[in-house]
Image 1 (spheres, rainbow, N blue to C red):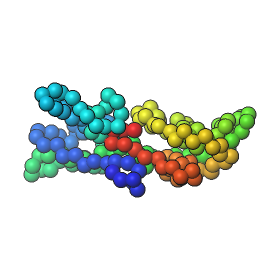
Image 2: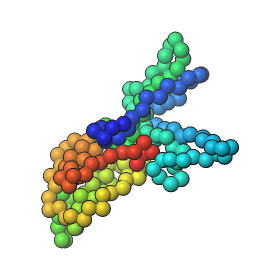
Image 3: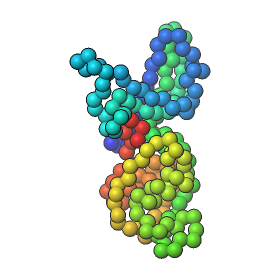
Image 4: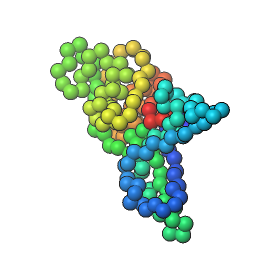
Length: 174
């Protein structure tokens, strides 16, 4: 992963007696460690409490599952949350701050976080499969014109970049 890409991807190679059909496209994969320190099963590190042993969370990319006829190994690519969002399409959203909202894209006391929340919850289902942590920026935004494109770019380029922030994904699926 990298800051420029906004998140993480991984290439996985499964050895042994596996078939490509055992790894369906878009399936969620959680890679975790079983760590032992000084004879105790415990994990250290990670960014989130109770997830210290999670190394990576992602979804199997479409058209990436292959079985090597010579070795029998199955390989595939995993996409983290932000890479997954880049694969989706989202409608445009012309968001407007209104004291008394009456339409779908009018928001009361609109901040960048409320606009990002609107895109995530009203234009995708990513909020059902990932945790998102907002910036806590309280500056009100009057208008945000978001063109049709993938939801990652909509949030990163049009909602967060104007305040100097980025939409980033962690290896642990957040």
